[in-house]
Image (tube, rainbow, N blue to C red):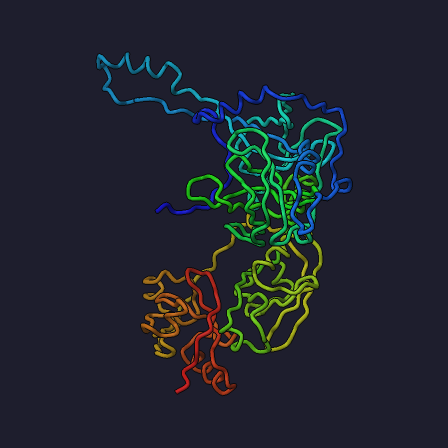
Length: 506
């Protein structure tokens, strides 16, 4: 059985495969696009596709004809190093030495130029073009060809890229170009079941159109800011960077990846939503780089079993703050153990959505953040920093303090000990306060929650603990309050997360 894999709809190396060379041969066929002629295809002038009584399109022909002048093929070239041959395979002075030297001198060790293909689309009459970052990554030259092909190849300049969303912005020196607009990827026409149309350069065969429906929304593959539209419109290698249209001729996504066991379309393709792309493109166009908001907290989702353990919490919506390093959140008064309920007036459903909210917020703005703390809602004002600058900063390491004399405890399926130098060395612990787990009882709630020997509990019941007495006091307080579980802040390798353990009731 072949295993399926998520793969970017990668472009293809023309030097190493046969069919891309066939594609290049086909570029000479077709009409020439007069770049000086304005062919407006903006969304404001787009007409909906004519449909039957049941809503199915009669044909995509008019839509394809309307938007195709703004869809482009992208050819990139890169100088790469070739293998240098069998250097060092024969000893000096060997009679074969001259033969192998001649073999190397034939150019096999010289750099060669590798070409690749992809897709893109024009978003403004003055020549801004959107594509995928992986289409142009590492390219020395980028050439743009307009549909229907056979016309002049335009050299493109790279304006900026965002590897986090796999988006790149290019610019060609031209005017009055045909272009398309971004649409509302969260509105009508982008719902599960709505018809969509994909365009691009699949498998190096040149301009191609495919149609299908939106299969799913809000898919996440591997990125922090992922918001993919899943579609069964055929997307293949070479479609990278091409547009996904709604029936109004608006771009609601950028075709990026496929799920496939063999590298070809099986009806599971992914397009980064316009809601993400439009914001990224705007920043690249203005700054040449992304400038995302940064709150400066480490967070985790709230599990259902944590709800009972947190005062005032009635659902698993929100984001639990596990750590507050130096930064905007610390300056604004956020504490570890706070539950972020809303950000800038919008309710926070989970950590993924909070990351997107913060990332889309302008750097340097003051935002209102509501947190749940000790059973009460606290309103804070936080001035957002810039995520890119924070990621580039090197955190300072803290010096270890001398641990107290060890005490041990067995409770809630855990064997706990105060931190000693020996235990710190044994488990690679950097924390100086808290209780280290030395063993976990099999089949216990603690084992089911994934706790392991070497984990360090630094908080219980949302209060810091340093001794076994602190821990037992938190258990007693939770039991007296009638709670069914106790919330623990657990650190593994320095990374914090909250875990709710069921309290013993016997």
